[in-house]
Amino acid sequence: MGSAPVVVDRWEGLECAAQLDVVLPMYKEVWVEPPYCEGVKGIADFIDRFAQEVRLPRARLVIARCGTQPVGYAFGYPLPPDTGWWKAMEEEPTAEVAAETGERTLAIVELAVRAEWRRQGVAARLHAGLLDGLGVERVALAMRPEPEAAPAHAAYAAWGYRQVGRWRPADGEPVSHIMLLTLPVAAAPANR
Image 1 (cartoon, rainbow, N blue to C red):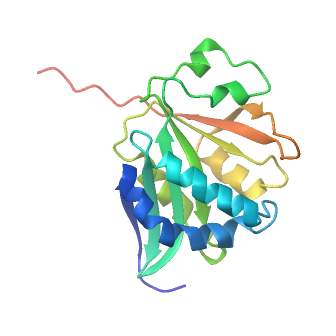
Image 2 (image 1 turned 45 degrees about the horizontal axis):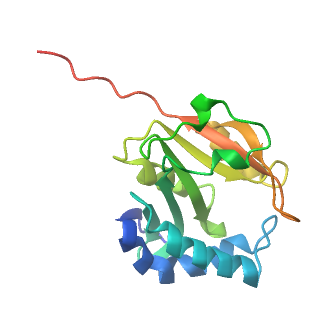
């Protein structure tokens, strides 16, 4: 770790695709660790998924760097009105939970910090950078259950996330918890 400050940069839409060469080495480093243990197929699936998701309206990528060294990244996009995100839950979500407008919910599909930079506020800075100026009402993500992902659960709980369901895994895939953070409503400007 260096003494340089951590800086977070942001890209939107197709600009994100040009950052794959920065993100991919971090993805490989972070997601091969237990409990995730991504292999060659998981890495290839990530590359394909990323290439598709950067095309979604308002897709956003943030990368944290210390000097020139990338130390973490986060990627997400607002859920479109026709999303299948909520349909994969084991429990039938209420119409209110599942209603999407393309501007209501940011789905965080990736948030990763390299091991030597964890527990130093980098993840919180990435999370804030991803949300900054987006104007969504809430944030959703899927994560492994505890105790497998206990540090991530602790961080998300501290940020105000709550579990709202579980994703049905595909054959042989692990269960994921669906987490939701409702953002505070911005104060309306005072009438003069």
